[in-house]
Image 1: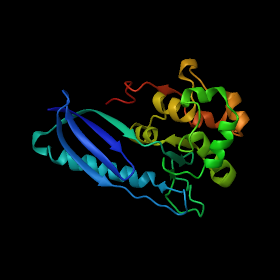
Image 2 (image 1 turned 45 degrees about the vertical axis):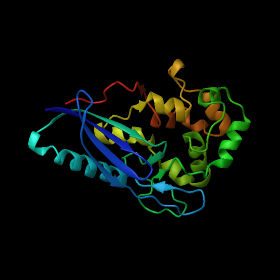
Image 3 (image 1 turned 135 degrees about the vertical axis):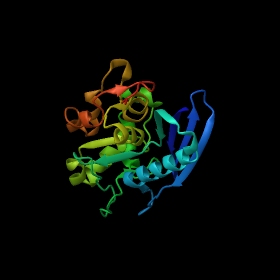
Image 4 (image 1 turned 120 degrees about the vertical axis):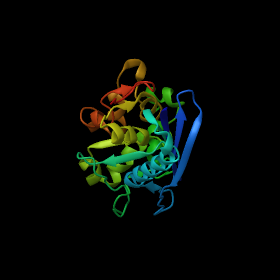
Length: 231
């Protein structure tokens, strides 16, 4: 029996579903994830905790089909608009104001970057046309700007800035490619030009990303249907 696995990471849990190649759901499992709220408007998670929850859910779902010996033909990931910060070796870097270990994710619901989002929107940059006209503090460039201003050591040490679904595909395959959907909707990537707008990053105070960290936040962007790894 051939199957595919769909993984969805929401705000409070990681869910895995096993499906036939015709789309019939055969099994599923849900595992809760941890969330920390150290201050008002701060909502943090752990990429290690999320990955462990995913593995638990996948094992739980597959166990339900163990007697049928399924062959997995593909795995797909979906997740929240959350920023994952890792060092060059892929280890978590804390985004907590007090440095709480393992808390390396600024969740989508985190609004610590309200000031940064307001400043960006005041600039009325052309790239904002492609994110609905205004940028949200839940998107990634305001969060990056907040980290640079408030956690400069973490910002400097970072080797990877991942959108959460792209962290998951990297963790599963080793490919640091990024979803074209995520980078356009949440990072201001200009897919129709196959590149970024360096002037935007320089204007908002993230000019250092243009050459170095833009590579860390997306060397190339893959369409949603393109497989990242086989075998």
